[in-house]
Amino acid sequence: ELTAKRFAQAGIPVVRVTLEGDPSTHIVDHRFAPDVDLIAMATHGRSGVSRWVMGSVAERVLRHAEVPLLLVRAAGKATKKRKRRPAG
Image (cartoon, rainbow, N blue to C red):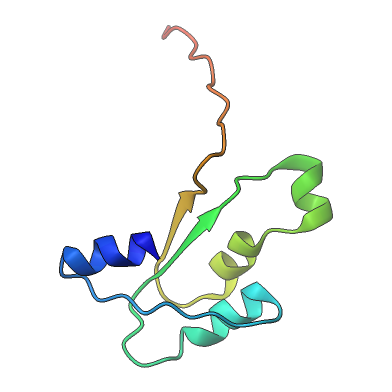
């Protein structure tokens, strides 16, 4: 809700939708609603076995949505910093 308010204050129209059921199916189906130019969603950034076991809503939406998709890391999730190798 806070994010929607921030977008509205910036003059960007936002429609929040709450549905029950399979998230990826509902998100992809909602792309057909009038005036949907972008789907924005948070992701937990799972990878490896946990992604294989639990599946990835973001990945399913990415594969099936026919509009641009903006993914942002969910708040409060620590990210691993990768060590950069020296060039050369």
